[in-house]
Amino acid sequence: MDRFESMSAFVAVAKAGGFSAAARELGTPLATISRRVAELEAELGVRLLHRSTRRVALTDPGRAFFAACRRTLEDLKDAEDAVTGEYRTPKGDLTMTAPVGFGRMHLQPVALEFLAAYPEINLRLMLVDRVVSLLEEQVDVALRIAELADSSLIARPLGQVRVVVSASPAYLARHGAPVHPRELEQHDCIAWSALGPLNSWSFRVSGADRAFPIRVRLATTIAESALAAAETGFGLAQTTGYQAEQGVRAGKLVLLLREFECAPLPVNLVYASNRLLPLKLRAFIDFAVPRLAARVRAIAATLDRAAA
Image 1 (cartoon, helix red, strand yellow):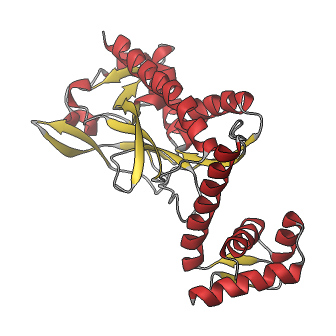
Image 2: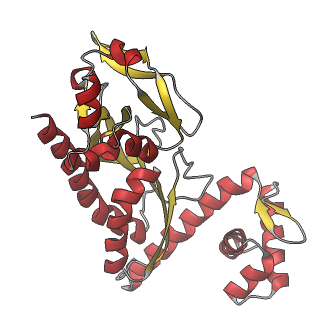
């Protein structure tokens, strides 16, 4: 068995979702593709693909092996290009993920600039408000706004974002501004969460993070909805600083309870640890890190000016 050809066949089948499509993509007979994958499974002693009449899907061992095979084949291609003098233009498919709000407002503009600079790279954006497994979901790079739990990933710091409470000048004129988180039970609060309404917000008081109960007058599933309601004068909203920045900059929102904010959240680009980083990913990292870091700094500057 030629391990390289078998791995190439397996990766093609997994990406295409079927043997026939992989055969067409590789220009190889269907029977050959099927035989190579079967030989690979026999050699490894595990089933890599679930087969059905309509399509194939990766098994749990198959997902892990697919990610490893793809990285290995990309590393080999980059090494061959470097040796033969063809290491000139980044090309290929790149998948990245980010939280919906930050991705739409900040990552996507940078990604579009990147695609204009690198016309042979194709980009897939996964904008979702959950932690995506790079290995299991075949993602090349992720933007994470949180403390990092997976130490096996390489992180490129972009800065920090605050969690802030804001309200409109009209609301504050009618109800006044809370001076301590314990007063939130006397204010109209707008809670948001994709998992359902929240009944408390976190603050740092006397050196410790504490949850304070709030009076929820409106509950919604996305931060943009909560902020839109806050801008109309309905009540107070707690969001990340990057979500509230536009309203603050426009004078539609005022920041509150700043001295009680919890520690800011780190922002990082993370990707798998490879000794030889694929050229397309290295090009994106080098392009995006300074631009995204500048955007994070600009958010912080807007919020600092608003409090001055």
